[in-house]
Structures are given as C-alpha cells and as structure tokens.
Image 1: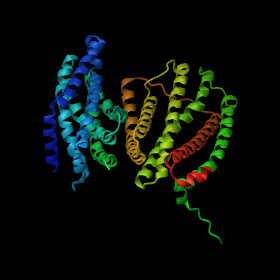
Image 2: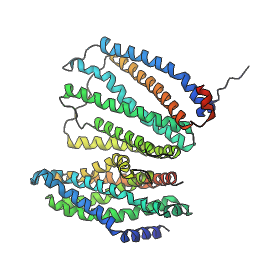
Image 3: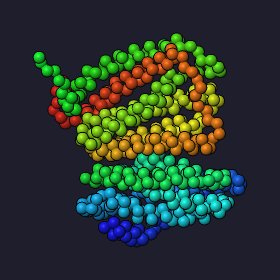
Length: 219
Length: 246
C-alpha cells in the first residue's frame, strides 16, 4: 500500500512534468537573481550565499505545496484514499515522501551547482547539499500540515505562506547556519545534528497533524 | 444541609454563558480601569527614576513588559482553548480561542512597538535582531496565521478545528523557534544588548505587577465581550437569543 501510493504519485508527477519543472526553475532563477541585484563582489556573494540558497529553497518548496493534496482533492481521489482501512499516518507519509522526491530532491542536486556561481569552496558545496538533504524533508513535512489545512480554500496559496513560513524558521536557521559555519571555517556538525533532530521530531508529529488536518478539511 | 454545587457544564452552553458573560463584563471593566489608574500613577510618578542615562524613557517598561508577557500567555491560553474545543467538541472553548487570538496579537504588536520606541533612546537603534525581539516578531506572525486561517474558512466548525491544529502545532514550535533564534543570534552577533543587569526597586516591580494584573483584567473583559459577539453571530437563528436580547 505504502509503496503503491508512492509509485502512483511519482507516475502522476511524471505525467505533469511541467508543474515540477516550474518549481525547479523558480529555485534556479531566484538564486541567480541575487548576484544581479547585489553586485558581483566575490566576498559579499560568498557571505550571503548560504542565506540566499536556503531562502530560495524555502520559497520553492512552499510554492510546490499546492500540488501535494490539491490535485487529489479536486478529482475526488483524496476522499477515496481517506476511506482506505490503512492508517492515515502511513498514507500521508507516502504522499509526503513522493512529494519530496519530486519537488525537493532536484533542488538538493542543483544547489551545489548554484553554489559555484557564488564562488563557494568544494567543502561548502558538499555541506550545502547535505544540509538541504536533511532540511528539505522537514520543509515537506511541516508544509504538508499547512497544505492540508488550506485545502480548497480561497487564496490558499497566499494563506499557506502565512501559515508555513514562520514554522520554517528553525530549519532556515540551522540549514543556513551549517553552510555559513563552513564558509567561516568552522565545523557544520552541530547545525547538521540539529537539522537531523528536527527531521526526527517532524517525522513523528507532522504526518499525524496532517492526518488530523485532512480529516477536518475533507469531511 | 443544602448542598450548593455549581454545575460548571451549565456554562459550557453558549446560551447560558452569554448571559453570564454579560454580567461579568462590567465588573472586569471596572477593575481594569482602577488597576490601570493605580499602576500608571505608580509607574509614572511614584517609581524612582532609573539611574544612568536612560532618563524618562525607561517608563515604557511598565507597558512593554506586561504586554510582552500577555502576548505569550495568551498564545498558550488560546492553544489550550482551541485544543479543548477540538478534542471535546466544545463550541464555546473554540469561540474563546478565536476571541483570544485578536487580543493576543494586539498585545504582541504593542510589545514590539513599545520595545522599538524604547530601543531608540536606550540603544540608539529602532530594532536589533535580538533573540527576544525576533521571537516576539515570529509570535506575531503565528497569531496572524491563526487569524487569517480562521477568517478565510466559511464553515465555523471547520474554522475552529483547523485553527486548533495550527495553534497546537505552533505551540510545539514556539520553544524550537525560540532556541533556534537564540543560537542564531549568538553566532551572528558578538555582544547582544539585553535588559540584564538592571536592578528593580520594589516600587517599580509593584507598579509593573499591578499593570500586568490590569492587562489580565482588560483581556478578560475584552475577550468576554468578543465571545458574546461571536455567539450572537453564530447562533443568530437560535430562539434563546431573541429572548436574551429582549
């Protein structure tokens, strides 16, 4: 059931490639805009790169949230999924997992390339990828709560930003902190450990809160 | 002989609570006015001046600190009420949560504004990315999220429950946010400006506590009044309302 649901969502995403690519290019575009707005000084770019990459990742993953339950909600399949005897926790986890693979993994892969634009060292590029790898699942997990709460509402996209972005702040701080620490020649380990801890906590609580929110929104 | 037990569940019904709240509001309003008058008089005229270069601007503390405390307390209270309303399907508790959210947001906003006004003469800047100020700002965002989520859902039952999920998730997040901001701050800024090191004179502390009590009484009065409006709006079809209004 779990695997089947993940597979189904991956196929659906593949058939709607344009949606997925839009988020991806949004991320690339936003990150590339910063040097244009700020100027090409290498030192400056190097010091703002961690924040820029992470804020862009936050915005991109927030934009993708509409897809998480939105399509299933509109064509009615979400209601059918909610009626299955399987625990809703696992159903939600499967949907979040496939959403993460589709929307966030491309960002993790391309982020080091964008880091090259900002003149970061090889070591830092690895930490960027690592911190995003640990942090973006948290973004999907927390975002799922917001996506479930705003299902079918007017102006759901703006609303989801208001709900979710404040909750993203710890991830932003730890993620960008790990990268900045590496830029400054310190060890990123404490930040990465904190990111891992956040991931574990949200893995336990977020699917549960999302299930509750889904039941409230679809009744 | 006669056992006088109060039936608490009676007032869980909006119809009964509506009348009770109507009777309580004048009392709490009166206590609020008295406490504010006493507290402000003590704070502005009796409390001794602060030593050092702060001059008169330090008097802002008597509004700023109670407002900041209220902003935090009310968030917890709102989440508890919302949780009770969701778990036990108690309409009145959910209405209380909705009523508290606005007051809490206002107090949080006041604490930010007064903090900024105080920061200008004391620190020379309107805003610093101090851990407390930043987390208060985030608290305001959480309130705004709660209010805007509830106001964009038309069905009141769904609005209550969705708000409850959001408030409880926010409650779990508040400590995480606070500590993350604190660690972030200690990394990025060498020396942080904090209000530590000032010693409070008993009369100053008393003035502040009286004003805190005044803020509590104000919150109760305003929340009760707001709950009455919410009841009136949601139960406008109910026959008891016409009787109560008559």
